Length: 102
Image (cartoon, rainbow, N blue to C red; front, side, top):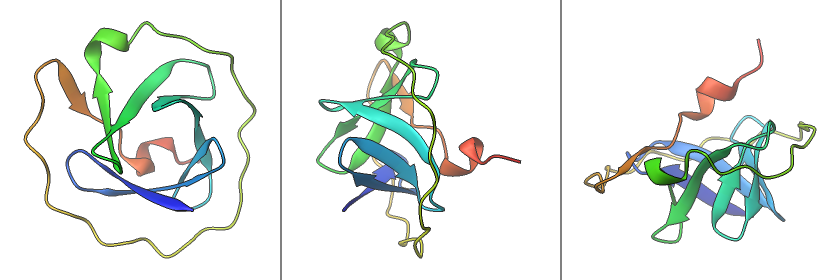
């Protein structure tokens, strides 16, 4: 299991196989190489610097096949890191809390 943080430093969650989970156990993404796609198939972002998630604005139109979300066990959230300087043409990956089902 590999843990990931947003570009801004927020602890996001972890990867199991080719699935990205928020720290609270909801699958929010599917990996295709280093790119992450949401349950609706739309591009969410990608991995840079081994464990940081960031969104490339030029790839917003990319689409892959959708998937049904799953929920697995949640884990204690790791601490946040300091953020990185934003890259041109990018924005921070969404917060894990923005995916929470209500």
